[in-house]
Length: 280
Image (tube, rainbow, N blue to C red; front, side, top):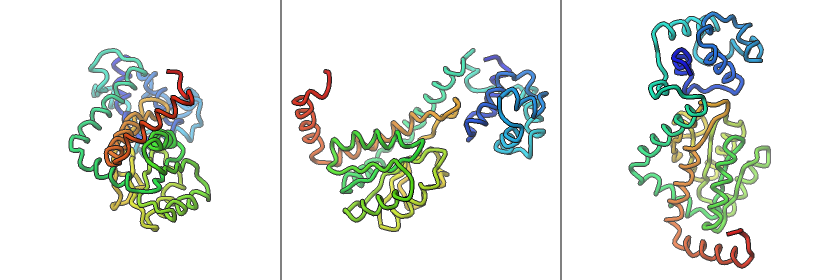
């Protein structure tokens, strides 16, 4: 990545863009020297998108339209704005993505300097029988991973990773069975079913623990226990190493709050060995 490309990349770093909009941004970065002189039609053709998509891209960045964005591109090149990655030398897009993710992990480590909030949430999750774990679409992988490991130490974990009208039913069933808390993974783009399901949980008296990418997430409310782990937007699709790791930290805190967690793990290992579940 040359200096001009790095300057323009800095304009888009951290912006909440759709995959289509990121393709447009990538074209601008690749064609940095000529980017300020491309018409919206030329940019659309180069990115393989429609001209209205280019206009929506400019608006998403806070401009009235594409002409305003083009002026900003010219200013960026003239002013010599630099992306942080450029200070580390010539890096390709994959290296930049890894370093961007590493920066978010360092920020998460700083946030966890005081573990009291995490430990409090762990006790809340441990005490909930059953424990519903909610994550839809982009957040489904984080919810599944947490639920998979949590089931080894918690007696009743219920994974809620599918939307639709039955989602509220499953939240209600968990509450009727005695659930006191719900763990939610909320990552962009947020499905419409998510705030509706959380509203049901709150109405039924469940305490909501949320792992989200931003403190301004639209799905959380002040009464929730909100833990923030930003995603990286360096590639066409978000990378979510920080939310995944934060979920594992919550899992660890929950294990610490379960008096029989170690005994359950040992029983699982013994039974798995008897059945030959694993190769090693």
